[in-house]
Image (cartoon, rainbow over all chains, first blue to last red):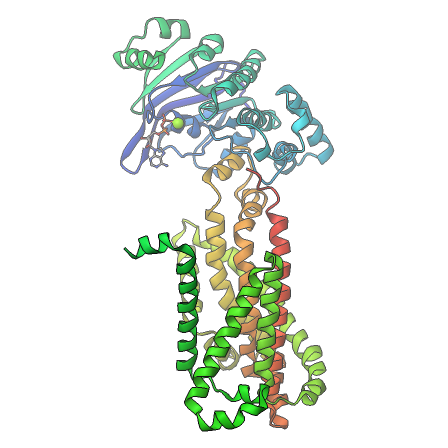
Length: 249
Length: 323
Ligand SMILES: Nc1ncnc2c1ncn2[C@@H]1O[C@H](COP(=O)(O)OP(=O)(O)O)[C@@H](O)[C@H]1O
Ligand SMILES: [Mg+2]
């Protein structure tokens, strides 16, 4: 537990990551305060996914330090598991478990990681399924739901562990256009309630609406960091203006 | 040119095709050397003619059989698909029985021995196979996880094991375990030796099945579970294996059926399973073929039962596949 009230929820200092000889993260330093909402954007392959996957150690970094909720991710697997209990993650491909019902997807981690009794886990799961507005699908299997519904289940599943931080990796990129809004609405609500969030997304409307800060990445580096209004109106770097002009078309 | 002719005269070409097929089958049967004797049984009056013209008799016999086959084929075409399947099974089964009948078997002897073959032999075969498949499954699971390990020592152990036990004939493994273990001071009974050999051999084959099953589950599933805080073993048991079972069960069922039959090899060390009993019971009265055919039919019947069970289990595990 962090003792200092103002301690950042997530702290990355001079982080480096290589895939073989490929330098995927190059000297990343980033601090995310509690209740802060950060949007990360940048061209494909710039290292956005790699960055947020280092935060819950789905990927191991090789240089610098990462401290999440006061716990340093230093290769100790128990520390990594402790961090993951407090950090929820939503993936582009949902990654729901197809052999379990929606309800079972949501209760799996509370029951096995937090050792919560089934009854309590079911109540919590139903609570969050109501919040993402699909309680009536609880007994169906993921394959029976639309993409947008599946992604909302994935959000509810993460929330059932009552995380202090939520990571989103392009949560709307795999969705049909008409389903993007229902997922973004859920994320906006979550942001309004004060969840600490890091979202990799190219939904600029969402960034404008909720982000405290936009981070632009290119070639494994953080190239630019600014308030969304500032970033969209006057990008400082050439790379970012090029990226934004392509996005608008 | 020929294509044009066929298109212009569809009916004629079909008849010509059927006639050619009939000629081909007749020729094939003639070359196989079918005997004309059966015509003599059906039409006793033709015996004289057949003895005078043996080669004409063979041609006639081949042609008649071809005609019977053709008529049978025509008749089957009028049935529904399900009836066709049943009819083909019944006909072929009848032919098989006729084939066995032609050995001039002593059914009294079979009737006398079959009870013992089933009570003693089938029980032993089934329990040796069942215990072995359970142990083999456990070995395969461990082997598969070891083969997916990044640790070189663990991976090395797993690959050496699978290579050795897939590379040696099962019969050799049975002898080596039964005769070799006592050499190093560990006396082992025939039944445990058989079970050990079957488990180790099939465990090695099934390691590959399990590894492929586990690898068939997308990386996203593991990551989703890990991100929720599940430990690697929880991820394996709660998320990966239940899904991998869909891929693992069908070939595992085949392995079990194969093992049931390979368990006949442990008869060489004197385990009283179906094969051993068939050999020893037949010996006493020089009725080998009776016992071997009976044993074969028992193996077949057991395989059919297992195939049925396997189909049921597959249905059960295919349930969530509604993508
Ligand atoms: N597991 C991996 N092995 C090797 N290279 C990888 C791996 N994952 C990502 N990369 C590479 O790292 C770079 C950054 O990837 P990623 O973080 O996924 O980019 P983004 O999410 O910004 O599109 C890409 O060039 C990608 O090819
Ligand atoms: Mg990405």
